[in-house]
Image (cartoon, rainbow, N blue to C red; front, top):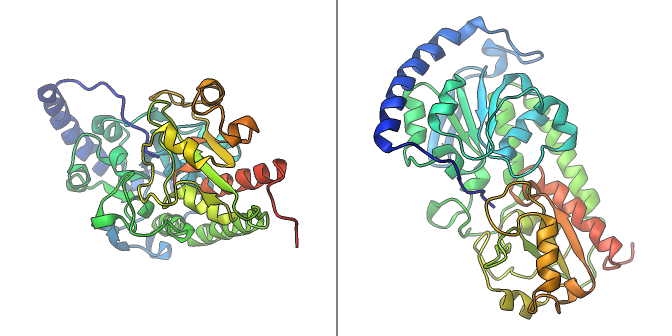
Length: 360
């Protein structure tokens, strides 16, 4: 689920004036940094890199990358973790919009990367890092308050890349947490990995990462839920909880282990529902988002468990009485390489609760 911007902004007039000055400075800085910066280790440049890379449709925009990017800002955790997994930490000059700590195996690489903001960064802050590429997992993080920010970046010579999971199979071509025409597939996340690897001239790294993800998801899928086992995924908010619908990352996780998503009849990615509706469906297992951000109520695991065990509507649910809780990071529940982490955690939970079918 998308995290929401919480940054406090100056007045629009002040912002416009400041941005005009910064855009002029950034244009000069981008031209100046050019070829003077050393190439990253193991990353080709020139014709050997396979450039230019042309993407005919990147969430509604044609994108052309003429050469391997030297300075990239990633404004979402999911996109950042793909780049780090591809060994591109030395190309990252800034990250933003985090729900959780970075994946443990990427912590050392990430420690060298400046964090521009915990939430959505202002365009001025991004440009101050002098990027030649800005990547994102979600449209709101890339665009902020501006509907045309991708166009504004393009006019400055700054390329942008949006994860295809943001807009793939969206009803009417929309984006965000709304409905999809069909359930998200892991192949769309693989496409993001491969496209970013091509952009940076390291396609073989992308293929290796995709193979690892495929192998891990297949291993998680060897745990099969007992027939009829239902799971509900709660991201945040104890007043009107965001529960996963059929067609996002949580759908991939449930299908991987053969479980039934309790809200699979809802096409919205993260619909807000009432607790009476959750209690009526009485899932066998509750997946609980354990987020480090603090934007809504009940974002961390402890708050969720406290609410579930004390609320008169929820405390009688089967999953609550039996304490069948599976904790996942918010990043596990967003479309990303962490989706596989989510499948592994649910598989382990099913085994722990005795809800896995006997091995064949």
